Image 1 (spheres, helix red, strand yellow):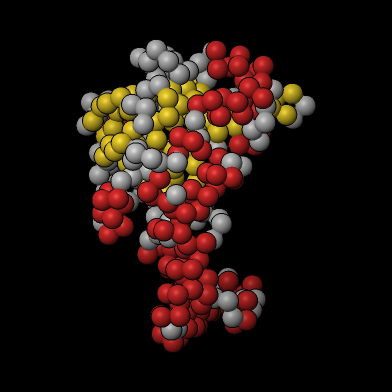
Image 2 (cartoon, rainbow, N blue to C red; image 1 turned 180 degrees about the horizontal axis):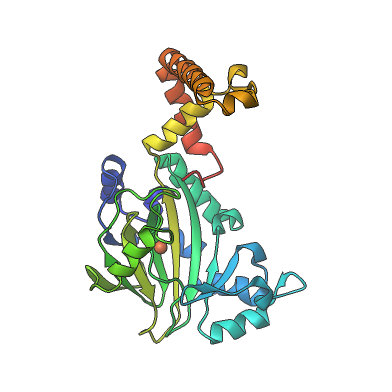
Length: 302
Ligand SMILES: [Fe+2]
């Protein structure tokens, strides 16, 4: 389990001390348990039996998602409708597989325990000749395991530095216009990911991913790994520092209408923050935060 599920010992050792900042392709290590845990027959069986949780299934083509009513009946996944849309070139995204596939939960939890980074897994099944998501970049590290078929990847160097949570997202201005400009240039890298390969894709690298030239369906699994940063520490410290009663007292409306009076509240809040932060025991905080990093279930902190 853990990163050893995806990478050989040397790669894992390197990652632990020097987290990757460049895309790289690796082979799944010999003896990895991953093919026994998640494979194309299993993912197809979830769809053909209708046993996948409907809230975690998305059908998408050329960057546009269907309304769930198009592939459900009475609120349940409808296998016949799913098959129809797949025949029309729709990619099926199986989200948060680690929340409903126990063995994948174990892998993701082990990666989090090992790295301190939250981790979840999403499957993609793209029909031959089709494309699901449009060109974009992500706010997190991706480990992409190609399960079956091949996927064509076009990758561009980052155009923004350290995209993070809703900061510098590719689908909002001004980054969306940057992305549009990028799409008119040739990619910096272009390759087909083969079955058994694992692509390391650091956040920020724009990518256009498709199976338009493929003869067979492409199935891959993305492990989304959300790195801890100083932002995460800052948020935790701020939450702890503002937990006292002092921060919960109401500010009179008249003071909110008076910049001078309100500035005194700002000054007082700043003093309270500084006092708390100056007296906080960094060793105790570090122990608490390491424990939280390794175990907290909500990995959507980015
Ligand atoms: Fe992506």
